[in-house]
Amino acid sequence: MDIKVDRVVDAKGLACPMPIVRTKKAINELDAGQVLELQATDKGSVADIQAWAKSTGHQFLGTQQEDKVYRHYVRKSEPDEIKEEITFPHSVRNDELERLLDGEQEIHILDVREPAEYAFGRLKGSKNIPLGDLEQRADELNPEDEIYIVCRTGNRSNLAANLLTEKGFKNLKNVVPGMSEWTGSVERDEVKPLN
Amino acid sequence: MSEETKQSSLTKMTPHELTQIVAGHEELFVLDVRNETEFNDWKIEGENIEIINIPYFDLLDGIDPALDRIPDHKRLLVVCAKEGSSQYIGEQIAETGRENIYYLEGGMKLWSEHLEPVKVGELQSGGEIYQFVRMGKGCLSYMVLSEDEAVVIDTARLIQPYIDIAKKHNVQIKHVLDTHLHADHISGGRDLSQAAGASYWLPPKDADEVTYPYNQLVENEDLLIGNGKVKVHPIYSPGHTIGSTSFLIDDQYLLTGDILFIASIGRPDLAGKAEDWVSDLRNSLYELYGNLPEQLVVLPAHFGQVTELDDQGKVSAKLGDLFSHNPGLNMADEIEFRKTVTENLPPQPNAYQEIRQTNMGRINPDEEQQREMEMGPNRCAVHDK
Image: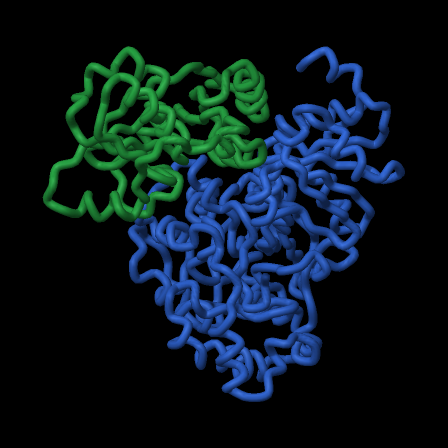
């Protein structure tokens, strides 16, 4: 699968610690919310990128393996993301949406996370437009539809809901908290399982 | 190599040198820079070894957090998974002007594979016996040499050390034996037998599913080396596996495989039959071994703690002493025994199912995968934690 990222770090052929050293340097140059792809051949990078992300607070999205190359995806954390206030008045909780998904009714879900986040776990049938692209791509959506907007924690979807309201969308719901606490089924791109 | 490497006083420590330190109960301070999960799973141990874990990626902004925790006066060894990160961090520590800073050659990967041959003793009938200590993993294997012939028992995956000793002593490896189908390490038995042109022997009851030809070890059918002078006498002693076989060598040494260790006894669950094999295990230990001469020298296939190593770096004990001190041989009754060997067992060795499949010849992982499967402690005894 092809995932849109903001920065690719090529550490193929490099041994530990260089993949993480390069990742750290690159992520310092990224803006919060942007996604980095680390390409490495060192198997140690699989566990280390996750441990490093945990230690630094950045969001580890997932790893794919193709031949001998590992592609690790990390999203730079936004320290204030969680503290932002949710201002959009219409929201549904995760479990309410889960019940709706189990029902017969067709529903529209907009996922405003980064493509890499979306690739590693999303709601079935959801459409992905990253928050940063929404301004230009709002015309892909129908303003008359009832649209459930989801992100990781409810903040980006809050911003997206406000933005689309300004554009005349009438029937929007912000899904809270969002994918970070989603316990129902998710769909993901086919990846080769790692051992 | 960077410019800094040449100027810094970072020194390489080989697995052999580290083995000497561990076996000699010398003092060493170890900074392990692998990630926390790997560290918690498995680390360097020694009686006078103090070890801390700070992942290298937590030291990329500076090594001060590590310096604060490293004592000034001690020899410092930095270790990582392979080598690179320990050099990277070690160089920075050395640049602060500290001395006695080492990194471990080949990292934990090489440490897990390194074999240290130690002479156990002479044979009455002429010849000698060596124990190969795999310090990083707690595995023990053996070579018995007499005149121009040798037999190897419980061969580790990497076979070069056996070939080297055989060459050094100018002997031909004639037989290669496994006491049982191993679940904690990949046997090098087949490889060694092919490389040396030796015959490979397995207990048939463990070999139901093996896919390659082998010779059947049969109780009381002795193998001979040293032109018939030295007897390797198989004794059927089930319990760890259904086929587990002990060897009495030179009427002096008892190779117990994974049935009896120095500080513990074998676990019966790794082939998935804990309940079934409890009474076999108890019978092998209490009846069979219980009736053997007390002065026999027990040579097991594993050790659990480095404290089991003696001053020469080898692991052995008199059978009589084990009947006095080993908790596994001193359980009041069958109920306590059953409880001990079936309940609260330590975690199973890493990838033990795949290792068994590999030893049967049913799967053929490449070298990197084999190494990966063998990572971590052996955990074949009931008291291992």
